[in-house]
Image (cartoon, rainbow, N blue to C red; front, side):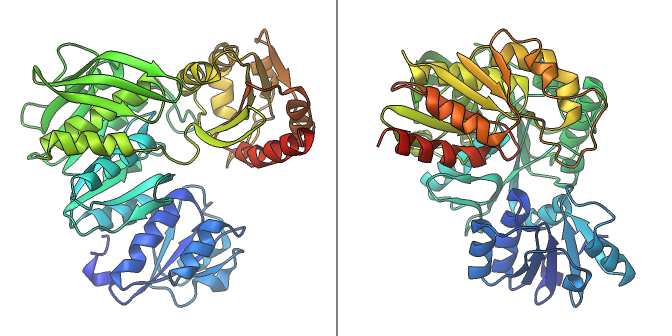
Length: 463
């Protein structure tokens, strides 16, 4: 049985892999509860430095002695059961919990809103946090990426609402048991865990079954997977609220304007026009994310005008169409997109942003299993670019699969280039860039490390 939040007061929690996006956010909130935090990771980072400044004791290597003296051990799903610290915790009979379990404990004393979906979770949960802040609700939040305006991925607020990004990748989001939830879309992904699309559908059904009966589920009426989920929610379950382009949606958006670095749409709530959504982030997909936030906020009783103000001041999250720099008219964007559907909508937005310039993409596939399952769809999406360079696969925690390399993608492309060497890629991109071009680093691995190198190379070239 999991401990309660009050029972952890004065105790010490040790986080294995504390530098990760989800784990660091949890640690940040735990530190505000009079709980001692220690942790470990394989490398130093600005995230770890920030946690140290808040009082956490962190080692930049995994060692069994790091666990000694802890009352509870927390690990992410990226940490193997053979990790020396997990092994030591078992030897000491220390209770060990997943990240999802600890997040559910932190959420337990709040009116929690879980944001789920195959795509758009981080942006939508970030938008919701900012919109609620604009309503003076001061929500707590734990999100898988940094909100650009605050530079933070987690906060313990003074209000009753807790916004949590609900990651479905290992099915653990059923532990959250939220008051309400948003489901942006449902599509087959994380094929290492979900063998079939039906398995993904079942996971979301299990998740929806954990929503408070007095709460509500906000879902996208335009997405077939989300509609399937809504059809499975029982009459005795949470209230269903729909959003989307569909005229039958409870929150309907129309009169859409897609701009180079923004978007606009009229918002209609139960047949009544309530205002205009004006975003500083591009793409129709982000207007849908904003519609989900608006529907949720209205159901929570927040004023429409203030919610729209909050959406208007939202400037995105880290690694979601993030402008890293501009050199001599060449713009460098970094994005986390790693599924074909995400890449499709991201490159559509990038094409508008590029205008008359070229779109040059450096893509790093994430996981062998995902590459094997979606190679043809990756090829089709990446061919939207004027030039697409594909790096070798970022394995994450997976073992290689025979015959699965990035060439599975480039072999099906009309404009694809397979260049596995990071130095060769940056040299090639910098040498070919011209004013007006957009260079995008794309993927969920470490491809983002190339963006500052490309910017530096452009500065030296155009100096």
